[in-house]
Image (cartoon, rainbow, N blue to C red; front, side, top):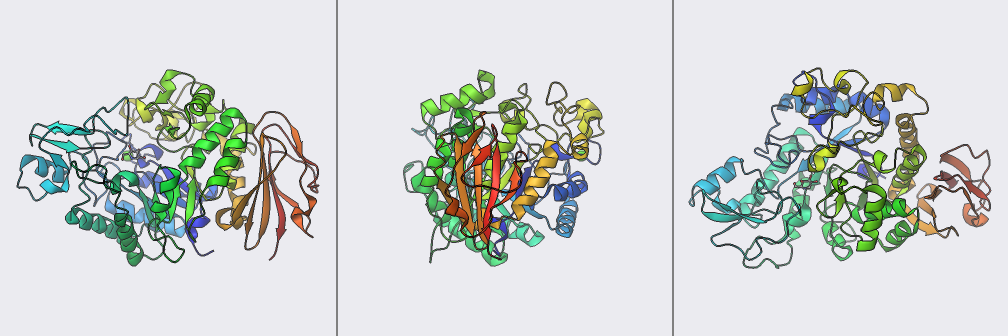
Length: 546
Ligand code: NOJ
Ligand code: CA
């Protein structure tokens, strides 16, 4: 307890796509403010905003030109402080993306650095006078961006970029750059944000030296970031994006006296890929295996679980066979795939809009060890627009209603930042908030209920998780045991109904109690004979002490 991030639900959204208040076709902060009541009713506790800084937005805002203000299209700093005030009133926290591995090439720092070898900003970036041998290696976007060093004609030198060529990497070896990073952090904390998602953490800590590209990562930077944050605001949280191998994961948390000294939270990429594989194969095995293998975390360190985020489903850590199975099930068309490793779709269409399966998948996520992160629009089952390039396919306006522009904006359709999905089974006439909030059987209503039930189960976020033998390969059975009790979860990944028999002693002297399920399984729970529908799930409280 007392660590808010361990029992919150994080909702991630892109301000530009959420709600346009002034009618210019672009979502904005006043629009988001007007929807805070919706998010409060939904039952989320924390809102993570994708970058809101000025940006050419060639990469969804992850190409920043000024770290100290808001993109004027979204509003002003005044609007931002108003967002914080209004969110406070509702008990909602706001987290920002901290994108300091790179800037936009339009950032005045880079413009100065490239124009003049004597610029004070020259050494804020990573240069090479000659063509680096690793020019063609290590791009984050295979198939789209080919090189990681680009020749700049203005500077007549090569600059390094792990992402697109318009995102030059900052030289984090330079103490001035580090000082600036701490300044950026201090600034937004002063305004009142609850923490940061650390973008591209593995790239941020990797060596900047072209002559020594294999030098060990400098995790010390993460520790310094942590110290800055914790000194300025004791309860602020750092959530790192680090899709790295098992052996490296613990480095991102760090450890001193049993507590994390670097990041408090890490996205559970490994678990995400296992869940996608389990859903594709209708087999609980992959999730079981990953849960068994997840390292013990330092005290108060936490996973952030997710099914979908704002990027492609990254399957890069599966074996070739496994990845092919997920592709076959959820991304059968070449156009649905991206960067040789992922799928650029939303979850609802990947699961063919099957409500039973969608609920089971989210129930699974919500019962996994960690803090759940949801993506805007997934609570109503939004789809994707594959006619849009790359990851833009899943970055479409929030579908509020069946009226013009999905209720997102009153601008003329051609002025909109992106067209809302109009046609087909996922179009806004069919999938929208207004209709679902009136329907007691809608996905949105389901989400409201399950998120409230989850609030009653602190053991999921903070307790010990244990996988039990279900006797059925397609059923995952696990428990979470916390200070106040123990809850049992069953998830049937297959369409066939089944029956599980568990040890009746699991509940001790207590009477097991159903908390949530896909259907009415009757009153009373007999642990030796638990029915599960096809794609069924059940949350059963085994005992509670006080
Ligand atoms: C990771 C972000 O999730 C992604 O959207 C972005 O393109 C890269 N980092 C570069 O900032
Ligand atoms: Ca607007």
